Amino acid sequence: MLLDEEYKKEIYRQNEEMAKGALRVLACAYKELDHKPSEEEMKMAESGLTFIGMCGMIDPPREEVKDAVKKCKSAGIKTVMITGDHKITAVAIAKELGILENEDEAILGKDLEEMTDEELIKNIRKYSVYARVSPEHKVRIVNAWKANGEIVAMTGDGVNDAPALKTADIGCAMGCVRN
Image 1 (cartoon, helix red, strand yellow):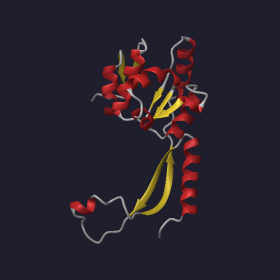
Image 2 (tube, one colour; image 1 turned 60 degrees about the horizontal axis):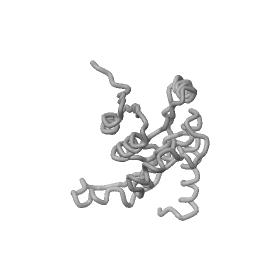
Image 3 (cartoon, helix red, strand yellow; image 1 turned 90 degrees about the horizontal axis):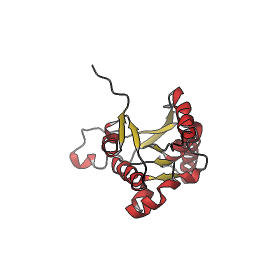
Image 4 (cartoon, helix red, strand yellow; image 1 turned 120 degrees about the vertical axis):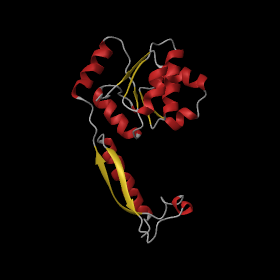
């Protein structure tokens, strides 16, 4: 069954509602096959799917984060969020943590791509949330803050954070467990 425009609008509305609740939203779909797909067919694996629904999952900030952000703010330290999350989800979490008040302080990675390095350096202070970013975007963001004379401390919990952690003046890998 093809999704009509009205149903698509409802899916987008539900997605946005969940994202505003600080949920990461996953769409679920399937395709029935009666054979193992060839390499050529695999290139089209994500087409012709049957939508079955969405689920939202929360990855709440640790309890102590809100207090840490408040302490940083009172010490004159600007806290920013750089994330791969959807912009709506990132804004909801950032508001909850006191990182941003106005949605105009959030920007997407694709918007960063349209800026030259000079434009990013000039405008970097406008933003507190960077959403849907790649590892390359993270490095550009760190470099833009540094180009403004700021000492940059960065935390990260994944391999995608490694280049920016190394670029920052202070890099702190989080959640690493050693056996």
